[in-house]
Length: 596
Image (cartoon, rainbow, N blue to C red):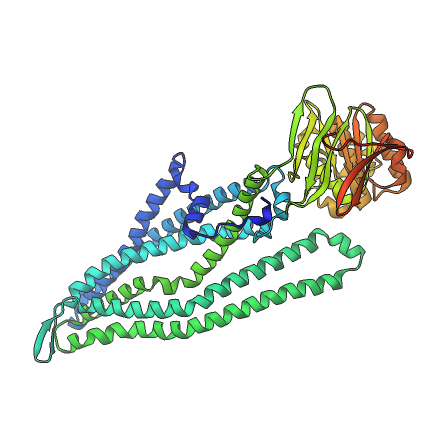
């Protein structure tokens, strides 16, 4: 079964999210999380206590005003100060505990997704999968932040509204009394009538808001997708700033970024249109919510059944009840943004899971890379290379490269690169076996060496730590490759892929080779930016410094043949690639097809 034939699981959004992110809460070893969550719950209860106290305070204040009692008025001023102090302390503690949980959850989920992405070449392999998992950097940096922060914010606001609803439902029921309603000559008692009115009022408002909010959810999803594409386009230009400058491609890049930003503008305008429709309702609903409770409770006050304080207390209780029931209206935009970000995080996570299943060999054959201590060299046994969609790229073949040999690979460049990646265990698509000698140090030198934004010493030692490279070793390596002028910059941090010319970057790759001292060397067009004289000097450097090492090179320069004994030619015939062998110098040798 090919990767393209698999589709991501789109069922059970909540279940998928909990499967991904729930481990932060379910890990028994993470007991501090539960302690913090318990404290946060108590502080949320404290937040609910404040409006309850204010509701009682309002009753006593307006009763004092109605009675023109200065003593009770002064007492209410003191009580207000106490409520303010309590609210300040509770709010600050609530904020600190909440943000600590949010950061902890984001850290846990970021480390989890980074671990899945940056392992065994998955960050490279996942790019070949179809589906919605582009811009992994934005998904990890931004969408995880929104997914974790908003989840806790929404959960806390929902808990707060639920507690508020429970508290003020009881208050509103008690304040409603049991008025008499006469219909058709029959008198009915309606206990808690204000509560029923509040429930109907909130239900109607919420239903209208949810109906009008559906376009907003879609608009948020579209806008976030356009924003991610624009960020990715900017990052690409930044990463290739030197190449763009050398080719004077700024105009074309501006046009491309302009097209991407046009998508951002369309997404913004679409969201603005959806928000405007929501605001038409929200503006009317917010004003009506302020006056409606007073209008509903005023007849009882006019009839003398309640005091002014009870009227104001009833109006506030009605507002708090409706406010709690209006949680979906108030949080619709935030929930839409959260869901869109979660879907983007899930898209990357599920793509990586699907990749693991595919590479694990579910329903299809995969290339097996093994180590052997039988004394033989590098063996290809029935090896075939396929594209990720299952199409065969290289026909099966058997081949052995003995220790100390110098082998040049020419012909179809894409097939040669895939062969190298298969040996490096980052191209699993295909079949057969690759057997490497045990206890040997292997070094792959790509066409452009990766140079981290760090010190030059770190770039020399990559991927091991800079502390492994002494000043003497670094100086010797740089001098041997003609980069001695960089010695004063050894412990300076810079964007070396921008500071150094492409040819200097390739020379730095040879300096890294001298530091690593491998037994097997794989060069992938690692001299294509060097002039013939410098290329010859670097190849002689390998001959001199690594006389016993095995050298396998991809390249088409004529100067390469003098430093290799065997040549593997990858020829494309009828859509697939076949392998034949020559001795460097032109004489043909037959490569055994798999199974001969």
